[in-house]
Image (cartoon, rainbow, N blue to C red):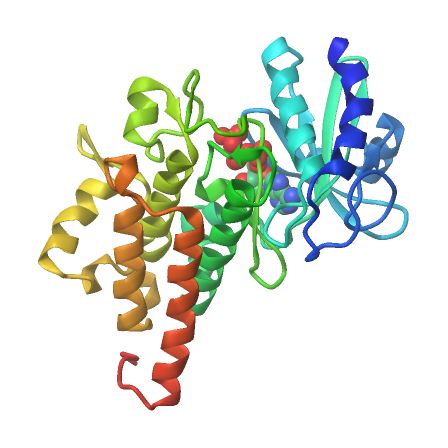
Length: 340
Ligand SMILES: Nc1ncnc2c1ncn2[C@@H]1O[C@H](COP(=O)(O)OP(=O)(O)OP(=O)(O)O)[C@@H](O)[C@H]1O
């Protein structure tokens, strides 16, 4: 229960943190861009008593339910499945960090509820759900992810991550960048979610050593082997995410009895300069060759074995934004770079 007392302080902390102007407000209150404490009763009412028809997802922390507040706002409520000290810590970190940050590409915290052993976190509802749903799961057959949307998701997630690494004090390392943690709003704008494993990095520290959290297939080698965590671990995971986004392949695939990582699959194609074969067949060849090449190069730089050779997220944002800029110029000049 010691943690409960701290929540009051976190409310204040959110007002001290840099607040991005892309989203209004911050700290406690009501309405968009602010968070508040919800009662369990309110959340029962919003989710039809956590009816199974309202359940929209399931993760390690618990189930996620769609709900609606009396003012009509749609919310997503994550409900802890079973109380434990570890779960309490995850809950606390998520609320602490999301309560501090505001950015157009970070999922907005609406608030939380802590009554007895119930722990619930309330977010804005993201109607297009997660990137994972579109790439590999329930919406994959709809092929809603055309090339432009993929590029927008890549740039948006990079901007959210760069904000955490470079514009918050102390810096924040997400530690669980993956497709199910990239949620999508109605315009397919990326919203980085799930801060339960995030870490605050003390001023001046190059890295910290911790127990390994995160998801297989996305883990940077130095982190998976030595537990050494720095911003560069997120950069590596982002490289894997980029490869997944352009190829539609999973970070780890089962081939008979063996497993192949996306890096092992993509590596030979990149070395041969065979970028076409890296593109998701669902795109039916509809992509900018120039953009594809540059995104693959960016992904390859991010997913390098040595952290010292990876770019910072700020550099990644610049590379992806330059790309958008340059490809617009190519189009304006009537370039034949567009395959179809
Ligand atoms: N704010 C939201 N709006 C809409 N759907 C959401 C929202 N939050 C979560 N979901 C849905 O619920 C699913 C589960 O989310 P959750 O964060 O609990 O777990 P996960 O990321 O899939 O897994 P893990 O626990 O391994 O991180 C998501 O993949 C998404 O489909």
